[in-house]
Image (cartoon, rainbow, N blue to C red):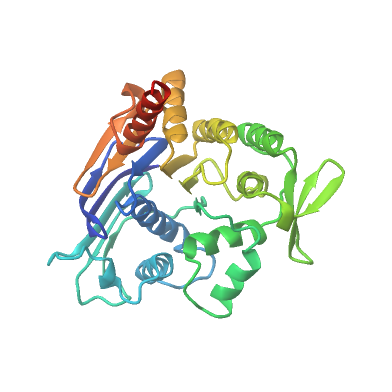
Length: 338
């Protein structure tokens, strides 16, 4: 598991340190406060450690990391990632179960990082990032834009995820028990499952004996079917790290509740999960899970000026999402008595 992370002068984050990281972790905050930045920073480093030394790839770790940062953040020059108005260097440090890595660069850095200290051991597991937008219907476009046009547009979170579901067919045989149970629950939510035709490159949705074109299927079904696919093709394993940006996107609150129950099952199996959210339902459901399961679920509340790290097992902290929900409730009461 990822155990701690330090970010300095990274985008909107002047200084950020997080060391009570657990199996399920939640980041909340207003737009542009750094939620997705943190997710992507963690993803680029853990994913680089997984790609390093695989197969016959001769690339040094620094090369892999530089490419991953370039294609994930999609900036022409790395110095664009440095916090505006500071003269300091961007720095990141991560401690994980398989070692430690840190890197830094200054305002002269373009697209290659040379100052890297890496003690990560070889990592066999696969981690993945599920973005807020659906990628199923865009899979061909995503692959073409990266592999043929080499163009910015879909960052590496989209590209890696597309490869993970397209290049890895479903595996037969016995799966991890909790994964099998999770797949059953996922398929119960959407009343079917996604299927990919390797020959034609087409996605379909199978519901009973009926097969539907993916183009007429809701985004919620695609999002849930996506996770089912990652479990079915064994891309995810108990040592994986799963990053989810806005799980509430396109999901009905009831489906979101069920989805987060499944996420909890996966965490119990060993998968570490990081979630960024704007949703009151997500916060409330994870609070209930923390209480029911007696599970530590750190919650990072980000603002323009600072951040606060608490634990949902101790209660829901004050934050703009909850405050807005209360404000709307009070407005409703006021209107009702007019």
